[in-house]
Amino acid sequence: MFANAFPPDAEMARLTARMLWEIEAVHFRSGEPFRFTSGLASPVYIDCRKLISYPRIRAALMDFSCARLMRDVGFEAFDAVAGGETAGIPFAAFIAERLALPMLYIRKKPKGFGRNAQIEGNMPEGARVLLVEDLASEGGSKLVFSQAVRAAGGVMEHASVVFFYDIFADALPRLEADGLTLHWLATWRDVLAEARAQDRFDAGTLTAVEAFLDDPRGWSAANGGAAPAA
Image (cartoon, rainbow, N blue to C red; front, side, top):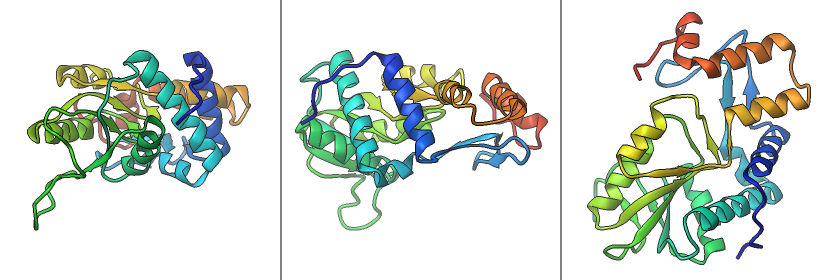
């Protein structure tokens, strides 16, 4: 069980960004953009999977996540915690342990043999399930996982992530239309603010990053990448 500490949201965001920088989970690179599977070119990249290798940092972040969920949703709001394949599975385990709840994990598609299961673990009919993943960008995987839980008789209304891009205007409305409320600790704006506070990069790199955050699809198209439709 966690310590029931409820720091202000701004302080949790600042500390989360600081932790991500400390373990080098965040990368800024304007000269040679990163390329995502969608074809989007980006001067920023984040790898939240690295968090699982840092016990003190992951413990602090999972405590933050639990505090926000209990404060904003309720202390008895969930019956189970489900991790999305694959990055969400360890984070779901950490949160389920803290909240003393059963854990599940959800495949991106049915197993294809045996029981042909998409959800692993025991989920009673009508169970209120919290979805956990490492991050959210445009929200597509959250919809896949929520549909799987609902098809199996569960209720899914909330998803929790460590990091939310918060740069695609359609992301939150897309989730809300599906009946999902997203909860997060930090965004790219928080990470950029911490980079400025620590004087980590030259002004040109920070300007390029901010331009991308303001218009990711436009920046991508102007820098040799695709501009995926909203």
